[in-house]
Length: 263
Image (cartoon, rainbow, N blue to C red; front, side, top):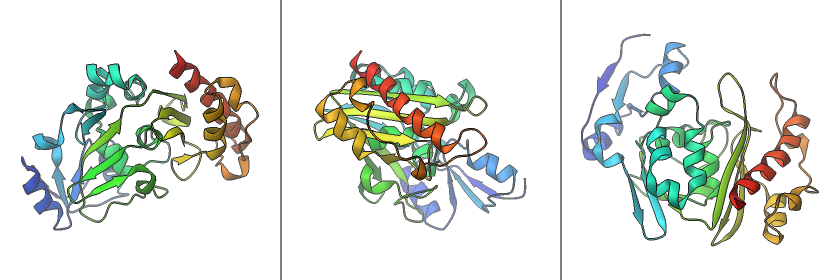
């Protein structure tokens, strides 16, 4: 490690003022701290958001669940309202990393980081959620822009994410056994705006698949996606899994998610 300053604001106003000066916001630290230890990132000023109560908590607002950016994975997984209204989101949170990661990692941190194999971005995109920041509201379809890239401007803070309650939704992933990130993860949802399918772990970032969505819109069954073409040339391969294998697993995980959603 190296020398840096650490601020611990207790209000959103103070956090905004401090990050507005070019400092790096610190959420759960599951990626940032590891990157700092490896000197892949060297921020001179860190702003720990853990003490900002305005960024925490879960509430129901009509047909929407609002989750504060600093809400821990374990709290999403255990929340009674999430488990009742969007059980697929609770199950996703319960399957992130291990117990230690779930006790420290936050929803806002994960979504802002936009790791190409992270789970939360698939839920945000799959449910058609809205990312609320200290400056504006951003639709999920406009938020994720590629490898570790989002629509957030410098110094902009996620304050909450609003999830519309779907008719049905579920997430299925094939885990990388060491990291427990998704080699392939698929979030499926029947929403008021139609069927949405979001895929993570297969490329430069989370994305929707029009072919799978069209098939499931006709018949929300595992059998409906069997003949949908998954183009392996648009999917990444590495030492853990080839492009062809991941393409096959997209179909497998989509079918598994649909089965879960259908109960």
